Image (cartoon, rainbow, N blue to C red; front, side, top):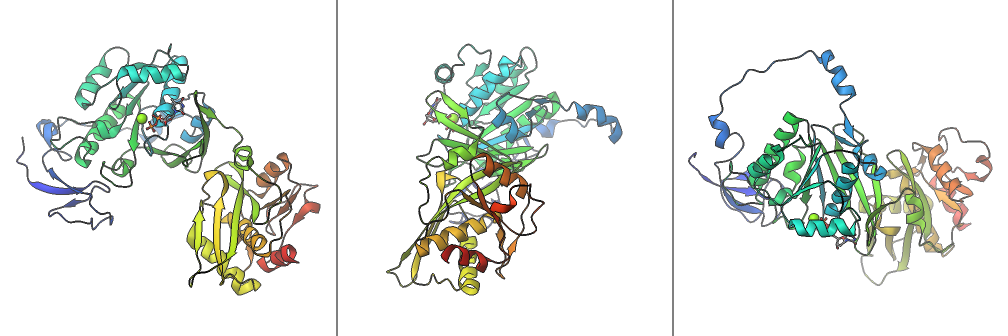
Length: 457
Ligand code: TYD
Ligand code: MG
């Protein structure tokens, strides 16, 4: 074995330090440096015994056929297939990250059962639960009679040997990457070195056999468990499974995808029989709506190719503090500061003596600048105490000059709104051609000041 030198590796970002420090210089996290030996790093260990083999380049065009049926394994769970871009890609590795307890194992158990029902060989390797526990969960999910093969192992070499028995699997699920260890590295399981080496071995397996690999990774804020951040760079696709405490719905968000779009989401609802697909998320996010209360505006947003309507709630209340509070849930605080500044500078609306709270209903998170207009409408409505029309949706980006800028997919947003019974819309000028019949109920202000006048009179 190679001579090991001591080094300290940040468990959050994977950067290497020669001395211990309280804070990682690279990512700024505290208490994340852990002592690890250097042997077993990338390219050491057994690989140093390897003899060189000659590769054979192939013409790019000769791959065309292979790529066309670069076959995907679709699960038939459409919200999952939507997030992966049409199914798991053979020979690729995918990371599913999320907080502990959010439902990653549940989702993958359901996916495994669905895929097995379609005649695929699926191996589910759990390093966290015993086979009996996995079977109990499968029973609860109504998948107990499935042909999914279960294994409770944590050593990568053992796992690869187990999988090698019998027909080549179509999909291997590893739950979770943090429990794995490989003989090639000699630090403790769960450290960055181990996670990286184990992931590398599995990814190599996927590329060489054509099986799809799903790695589950827990994300913890404390960084005590090696962050899947390190693995994100190595895999072909990264999905995050998210949800807010107290809400039953879960969002599967694509953050990286070498084989598909990265702005798609899949929406699920956790029930006592596992995850249920939510094919119309707007109904979910608007579900708890009380009609026409001051401070509420419905935003017509887009997630990838799909329109999503969601309610934005704001509360503007007189402050007792020297510096008023601004609190945001589900949106960007710098973006809120910008909308407030534009309202003050160009529309004469003053928030200096008020606390401002902004919340996106249902624990949903918005990333689109198109929400500016809905936020502004909600803020003005709360400040003036005048409710907005209950059947009106808002979308549009606000520029620093107070002008309202067009956003993409106006047509689709309007169509979704109409489908859900909304009869009015406030949207930017110059949006794509509006369908006939929409125009009469659409208000298209040129500037934010026009909208403020319309709301506050
Ligand atoms: P789990 O999939 O074990 O989470 P993770 O693998 O991300 O850590 O799911 C854990 C939670 O889901 C747990 O609190 C119980 C709940 N749950 C249900 O509500 N319904 C179900 O059918 C199942 C299987 C779990
Ligand atoms: Mg789990």
